[in-house]
Image (cartoon, rainbow, N blue to C red; front, side, top):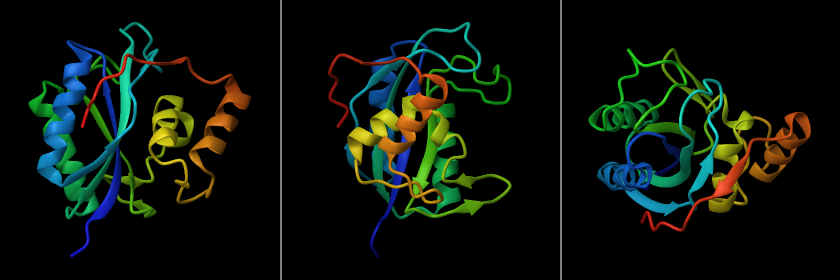
Length: 171
């Protein structure tokens, strides 16, 4: 059976952020085949601003898990790295944040999961590494490329400050 392709956003702004992202990639290997990982970017927080800067990347995962099964596995990885979504400040600091961005280009809306990720088009810290990883990727609803979405975001609100972080090999 062929594996499905899933793009997963990785983020961390507590503890050793780079080590946290590396640990996330190792954990993703338990869920399938990590096919590629973008460069890492350092970004200012969005929403709740009184917190440290984030490191962000995107991974391409080949997996046999269905979308909601993959979501459950990502949440388990977050919890195993100290994230407590129930008691944390919304959009607050976290050791690890894993978001399912896209799963085989599917459009899906359930009580637990929306695909593509509903905020993907508004997050330069996701679009920039996604563009590096998959320049031909297209949003499953708007059909815009990551580059087009990033440009629209920049034109709309000036974009978000994104700095290429020191090279770290995540694969």
